[in-house]
Length: 209
Image 1 (tube, rainbow, N blue to C red):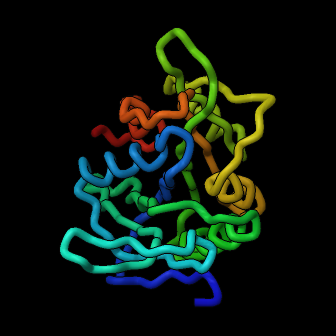
Image 2 (image 1 turned 120 degrees about the vertical axis):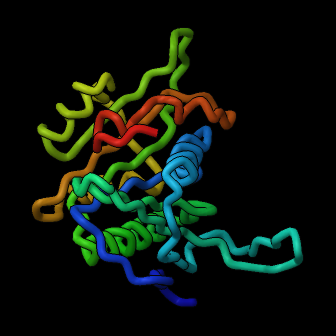
C-alpha cells in the first residue's frame, strides 16, 4: 500500500448529504459520538478508507481474523427527504502531519464525489471545568456558525484545533459552496461516553436520536 484510497462496498444514491466525522482523539469524544449516531440511526457501511499513514500494526478479531487499521463510511437515508447523512469514523488517526493532510484530501474527494456540501467534525477540547460540560463550535462561514450557536453551542475563539478533523475543516474553506463546522466538547483525557449526550443533530441537521 503506497497511498491513501477509498474502496466502495455498495453504491449509494444520496440526497443533499451532510458528512459527520469523528475519529479517536482527546477523550475519544469524536469516535464515541459518531459510533453512537451510527447505532441509533442504524446507518449502513458503504465504503472503507485505507492508508499507509495509519499505525503499522493489524487488528486481530475474536476468531483470529486479521485486518488493517482503516476508516469507514456509513450512510443514513432521511425519510423526510431533507438531508441524508454520511458518517466517517475509524480505528486511528494518521501518524504524521503529511498523513493527516493526505487522508483529509481522500475524505474530501470522496465527499465531493457524493455531492456533500457540509461537513461536521466532532472532537474533544482539553479544558478544566467544574460546571456542566459545554459544546464549542467553529465554522468556515457565518451562517453555519450562527445555526450552531442558536442550538445552544458556544462560540470557540482564540484556540487552535489539532488532529485529523482539523485539516478537514480547514480544507473545507477552500472548497466552493462547501461549509465546514467543527463541534468540540470540553473534555479531560479519559474517555467519557457523556461527550455524545449533547444532541448535536437537533441543532445542525434536525435529526433526533
